Amino acid sequence: MTAQPMTVTDEMVAELDARFGHEGLVELTHAIALENQRSRFNHALGIVDQGFTSGEACRVPMPQSPPLSAADVASGSASRG
Image 1: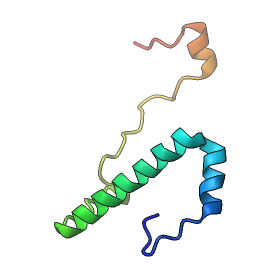
Image 2 (image 1 turned 90 degrees about the vertical axis):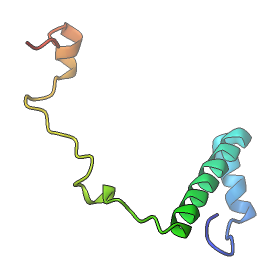
Image 3 (image 1 turned 30 degrees about the vertical axis):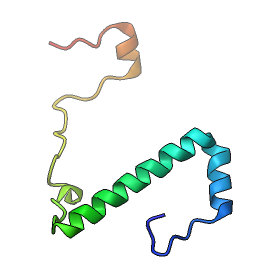
């Protein structure tokens, strides 16, 4: 959808419509179009990536203790002091 010229075929649309339904296809098309618009807008303004894909930004800290098992949660021993 974002390639120029567009290479979306009738077969692709029919497959997506069968999988997601008409409303889902419209929603998917909207999401793709919105991201395409954002990309073009950022490019026009010279906005470049901020390094989020490098793994350094927004790093999620590792937990200090091992994660709870489903059995721990189910038995109520999920509270840690």
